[in-house]
Length: 475
Image 1 (spheres, rainbow, N blue to C red):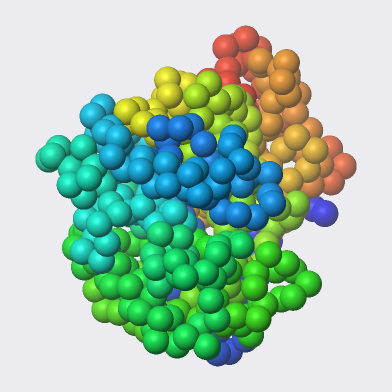
Image 2: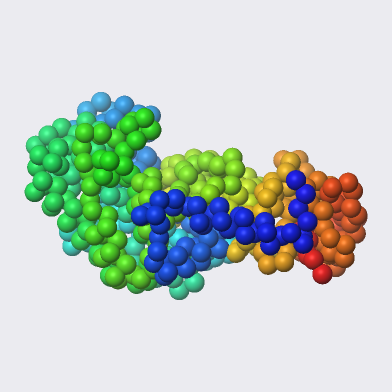
């Protein structure tokens, strides 16, 4: 495929059609609120965000929440056989959770340097422990049972949101729809065989109504008492109307139970407090999933709807001692690949029980920031453009400029002297530069592509590591 700069407008119109107009194909599912649509476009331009999973479970260095779920899944394994004792001890972690080294300003500064533009924080995970000062339960960090409640920063959600908002970040609240601590979801009368509600909501409608109200009230607390919120990021997609379950795909959902929490009611309330709020009801495709969130993987191709890859910087969502962190090279390459396909990268860091990040997290963010200082214009507010990627080169576009980002191999510390791009043929008079390098580069049309010459001085001393960006401008 040949991409001529004079045809670029047509390509952008085509890309925009696939990314926005086709995102919600059913008329009844299309978002019509102009404030929400505007905010989705704003969010799409941010490209790079921070996710944090944090709770009392960090004291054990175990997976967040899942070890108290009775399913026979690898991520639900426990080190002991006595489930009842384990669950009791797990829930008793509230009495020893005391993250005295909690320093959200340092987190926000590191994320800002890295070029991150928004943050999503776990206000409550599936285990039901609240990292905010809810009035609906005492299973929370501000409870008198928790030693950290005496700290003036005890409402960590508020302190985190304030610290990041002060630095210009978009603010997102992760919230788990299922709550395994709430008696209106996991009723103590019955066993808890899996992740789902352990009674039939249609048989006990009053109990289910109490759970719906409990959920509604907690979300309203977050939407009304924690300043400006841009994104409500809802997890636990098995809590959904029965008719939305795909029996073949959603094998772990209880297909017999209707776990409808009335999203229309929740969203109406949330947006009354936060006009234009983006709602991400994960995996429940439709009106209340304003963008989709492929987890721990990058799609093979550009997608026809707004999307964000959520991925761990290390191997676990939550803190694990001596976890292995991805290299800065790998993380930068992931970001470039995702943005070239029209997505955002939401990168997770799990704080430890003392409230600290691992040193490796700071190191990675610093290296990413060094790269973004040079190449950020090829990332932020860009649009995907066919062919998106060829061999080792990813493409993005913004305004009248096309960016070709050369991905360096593991042992490739310097750019080559000649770079051939087969699918782009600039118009006569176009200018090509390398971000971070003064002046323009020599180039020539070769067949249906372009051959770019990199000066020897740049080859010897490139402006950055891991990937180099060539900017093609039509004069």
